[in-house]
Image (cartoon, rainbow, N blue to C red):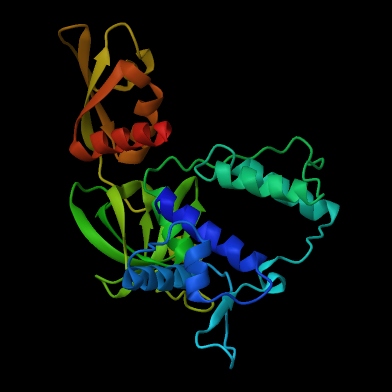
Length: 314
């Protein structure tokens, strides 16, 4: 959403909250910055879209019809808009504080910090004593934020997906039901439209950008669906393969000892051959070695490393 549109929607909400009487569309047009004051049709289309978007995110806009007026009026009832007072017990506040710690290093860190700030502004102390327990969740997979937002907004997604132990990449269209963590890995659970069946997808195997299709609210999550049960399967067996890795001379002794062979190279680099089965595990190791290694092949292992490094930058 553009900054201009965000400001217009915010101004519209403030205007409809502040008014003591319902305002007509023309009065709103004159009072809210950002509306086109030259073209009537353009304003009507924009105003209708804005009303629909605000209602989709849960902001109640009332339509009031006065028999003495030709046009309906609009307003937002403060009682319907405002949240009730939040009261939490000490242990409940502690759990929220611990949950925010979990996301501290993840892509949702900003949202978690903002939620705690709002609770503190309401007089709720979230820094309760939870002992030495400290949790972290790693969501550095580049596709995670887009998939999480699609689950939140209940929107269909389309992405390229690489199957386990294969370099084949296929496009999947999925109705997302949830994202679930299992053994340190994130999975998207949902309905695969291509296979016409529920499926789970490892987020780290999503290649490239995630596209959203249709309008928010289009996905219906089946009642009673067991998201964890959808991914509670043994890890898919993967065949062993050989990765070709460039290693900077004089570095990475551990890698060199595990490599099947190390061939002296040029320009300060050697070439190692390393047996692996899971590209993601290999990528995690290689990414931790930084600029001292470069995965040359196979392509899926190289892409997995690139994905890890890009995720670390976001």
